[in-house]
Length: 251
View 1 (spheres, rainbow, N blue to C red):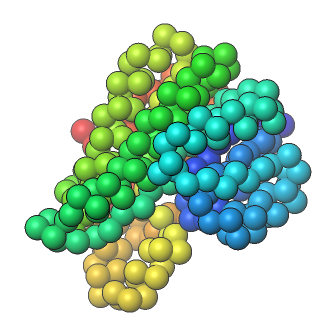
View 2: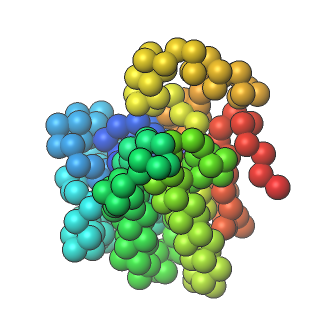
């Protein structure tokens, strides 16, 4: 038996990067997974991989910035599986610019793809998570915790996600719902492309990671997400889990 046998999970941004790593780790632990992504081609490719392990996996193509359609994502999962156990809010898009060059459009992009989908999907999922005493996993970032240069819009949205996650942990704990966050450093395609274009900065970043490497998508990030979505984490809520090789040590 897997740690997530019989559980149903929604994973946004599940077609690639960290989201796909979590999805693969989940199906290997027995979960039925609905990956949500804007990119239809990548979504269908990832779905084929997942269905080799879990034929009941599905892909929902959606633009998370369309708030009126977020409830439809949850409803499709309920119509398919009859319940929801785990919500993973991973998707987020942003632009890196110096603080004085950040525009309203940059802020809107970050909040409309990261913060607001997280907020509204949590609301839409709540009635079903009450029934299953489920788990929510949101995503924080070292950019917000450290205030990284050029990431004002991203950092602001990520810290806002941390704030509402703590509130939900307090309000929804009595329902048996756990709400936690992962703050990662991951060996994602985006980071790989950035490292290739900026080798000196990449090497400097690596030197600041005590464990000396980036986190693997499935083996590192996916395994922590499995833990946080399982009964093993039933007494953990409202926490930011640093999956970053020791780069940031919260107090």
